[in-house]
Amino acid sequence: MKYYITNEKLDAQIVEIRKKIRLLKNGIVADSMSRKGIIYVKNYGVALPDLKELAKKYQPSNDLADRLWLIGWRETVILSILLQPIETFSIEKAIARVNSIKNNETAEIICMYLLSKTDFTPTLCFDLIDSENTQNQTTGFMLAARIYSKLTDEQAEKLIKRCVQFSITENYNLYKSIGLCLSRLVRINSNTANTIKLLVENFQKLETPSQCHIANEVKQELEFLI
Image (cartoon, rainbow, N blue to C red):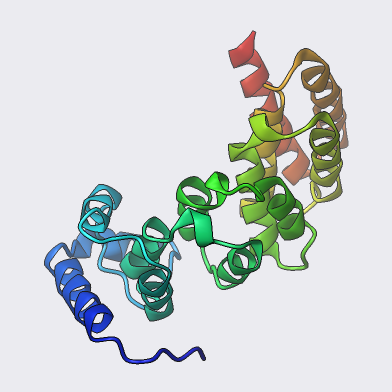
């Protein structure tokens, strides 16, 4: 467990943030998320737009972000993501954050508002995908889908190979994220799109549930782009 030296200003901010979160509580949303298996230490069901407005009231800070993440509530975790300064966020810290993620909501939010904004994002994608943790792999493919336009041709080719490597799986979130990733990669250029098109046509012939889902996702994207 990580411990922090007492800081009166930060302590007061944490107390204030907790109170504001409770005032914004939406029990119906929290109960619905719990039934869907989206589990946190605590969940007050506060809407993301409300949390974004709340984050604007505080100066981004490493210490504040660290302490909010450590609390583990859904709302403090999201605020931690929103209040983490990009310029002082390292790849080591990013991996440590992702290692503690337990659900796709957090993964999607951290990819959108934090990880995709770093200058080490492509490297991070492959570090996560090549881990042995399924949630990390899922997050890695999610992140790659978000930053596909930043990838070099070599990185895109490498990523397509990773998609094939992990395409046979019973984990719905993993193969859904692979489908999303390939659907974004077809937007890079016509050569990449044709490569992926041939790839997923082969997936459909194999009739593996995960690969069929991926193929359908890509097919819909290709039809949209035509």
